[in-house]
Length: 82
Picture 1 (tube, rainbow, N blue to C red):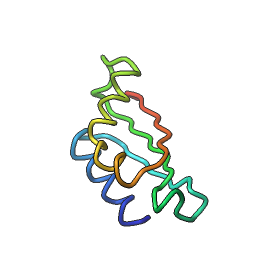
Picture 2 (cartoon, helix red, strand yellow):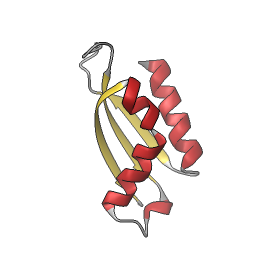
Picture 3 (cartoon, rainbow, N blue to C red):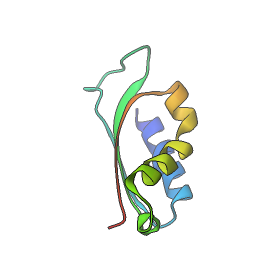
Picture 4 (cartoon, helix red, strand yellow):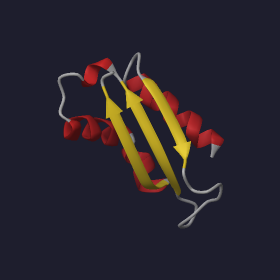
Protein backbone atom coordinates (compact mmCIF):
# COMPACT_ATOMS: atom_id res chain seq x y z
CA UNK A 1 0.00 0.00 0.00
CA UNK A 2 2.85 2.42 0.70
CA UNK A 3 3.77 2.67 -2.98
CA UNK A 4 0.17 3.43 -4.00
CA UNK A 5 -0.20 5.81 -1.05
CA UNK A 6 2.78 7.89 -2.21
CA UNK A 7 1.54 7.88 -5.81
CA UNK A 8 -1.88 9.15 -4.78
CA UNK A 9 -0.42 11.90 -2.57
CA UNK A 10 1.92 13.05 -5.37
CA UNK A 11 -0.85 12.96 -7.96
CA UNK A 12 -3.23 14.99 -5.81
CA UNK A 13 -0.56 17.50 -4.75
CA UNK A 14 0.41 17.91 -8.41
CA UNK A 15 -3.17 18.66 -9.42
CA UNK A 16 -3.98 20.81 -6.39
CA UNK A 17 -0.84 22.95 -5.84
CA UNK A 18 -0.29 23.88 -2.22
CA UNK A 19 -2.86 21.37 -0.97
CA UNK A 20 -2.49 19.40 2.22
CA UNK A 21 -3.20 15.79 1.30
CA UNK A 22 -3.63 12.83 3.64
CA UNK A 23 -4.22 9.24 2.52
CA UNK A 24 -5.04 6.48 5.01
CA UNK A 25 -5.46 2.78 4.24
CA UNK A 26 -8.73 1.66 5.81
CA UNK A 27 -8.44 -1.92 4.54
CA UNK A 28 -7.50 -3.16 8.02
CA UNK A 29 -3.93 -3.78 6.87
CA UNK A 30 -4.73 -6.26 4.15
CA UNK A 31 -5.86 -6.29 0.55
CA UNK A 32 -9.52 -6.86 -0.09
CA UNK A 33 -11.78 -7.51 -3.07
CA UNK A 34 -9.14 -8.93 -5.41
CA UNK A 35 -6.28 -6.63 -4.37
CA UNK A 36 -8.37 -3.47 -4.29
CA UNK A 37 -7.94 -1.06 -1.39
CA UNK A 38 -10.25 0.91 0.86
CA UNK A 39 -8.79 4.35 1.53
CA UNK A 40 -9.70 7.61 3.22
CA UNK A 41 -8.44 10.74 1.48
CA UNK A 42 -8.48 14.27 2.85
CA UNK A 43 -7.62 17.20 0.60
CA UNK A 44 -7.43 20.72 2.04
CA UNK A 45 -6.91 23.22 -0.79
CA UNK A 46 -7.59 26.95 -1.05
CA UNK A 47 -8.87 26.42 -4.60
CA UNK A 48 -11.96 24.67 -3.24
CA UNK A 49 -13.19 27.94 -1.66
CA UNK A 50 -15.61 28.82 -4.46
CA UNK A 51 -16.63 25.23 -5.22
CA UNK A 52 -19.57 23.27 -3.86
CA UNK A 53 -18.84 20.03 -2.00
CA UNK A 54 -20.07 18.07 -5.03
CA UNK A 55 -17.70 20.01 -7.32
CA UNK A 56 -14.80 19.44 -4.92
CA UNK A 57 -15.43 15.70 -4.86
CA UNK A 58 -15.83 15.57 -8.64
CA UNK A 59 -12.45 17.28 -9.04
CA UNK A 60 -10.73 14.70 -6.82
CA UNK A 61 -12.55 11.82 -8.51
CA UNK A 62 -11.39 13.12 -11.91
CA UNK A 63 -7.77 13.08 -10.73
CA UNK A 64 -8.07 9.56 -9.29
CA UNK A 65 -10.24 8.06 -12.07
CA UNK A 66 -7.64 5.46 -13.11
CA UNK A 67 -7.00 4.36 -9.53
CA UNK A 68 -10.74 4.13 -8.87
CA UNK A 69 -11.06 1.75 -11.82
CA UNK A 70 -8.14 -0.50 -10.94
CA UNK A 71 -6.83 -0.11 -7.37
CA UNK A 72 -9.43 1.45 -5.09
CA UNK A 73 -12.51 -0.45 -3.97
CA UNK A 74 -13.85 2.17 -1.55
CA UNK A 75 -12.97 5.85 -1.17
CA UNK A 76 -13.95 7.95 1.84
CA UNK A 77 -13.33 11.51 0.70
CA UNK A 78 -13.09 14.70 2.76
CA UNK A 79 -12.44 18.03 1.06
CA UNK A 80 -12.37 21.59 2.30
CA UNK A 81 -10.74 24.92 1.56
CA UNK A 82 -9.36 25.53 5.07
